[in-house]
Image 1 (cartoon, rainbow, N blue to C red):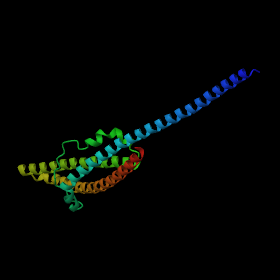
Image 2 (cartoon, one colour; image 1 turned 120 degrees about the vertical axis):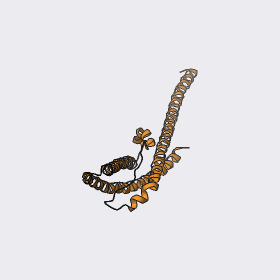
Image 3 (cartoon, rainbow, N blue to C red; image 1 turned 90 degrees about the vertical axis):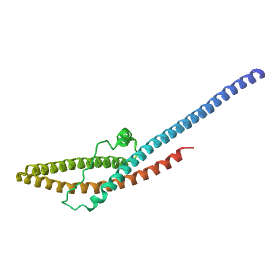
Length: 212
């Protein structure tokens, strides 16, 4: 075979092989870059989600602690000393929604990765609503008791005495219930804040590892 032709064939084959090898190397490099880009995007997404959940948890913590501190400062000492079977003689004015942070962020609760924190949040707020409802009902009992006394005083009729005694018995019984609710709520708030603090620290550590 003509040496020139042979050289041309070999040169062409070498070019094809070189092109194939170069293409394979280039494809691998592209796939590696794509994987790294996707991994980085996922890390940024996880970091953003952690930041969102962290904000929700801190907002809920601030709300529940603030509300509890106000409530405990006003009635804590009274309820701590309240005897079983003793009425709670204080009218608690409640005319607004106190759980705005919780309600506005309720759709995001499902993103909280720790089931125990999520359950503690829901349980604490449900108990908080129950405590508010207890005070609202106690307010009604106080109003009824006062109304019966006024009617008896105005009419001078002893027939209201039995109703007044029954109303007082209801107040005494319900005072014990409010006291029990107070102590349950006290434990729940303490437990929730500890869980949130632990969860936030954990997420901050995870985020620091994700970010470059």
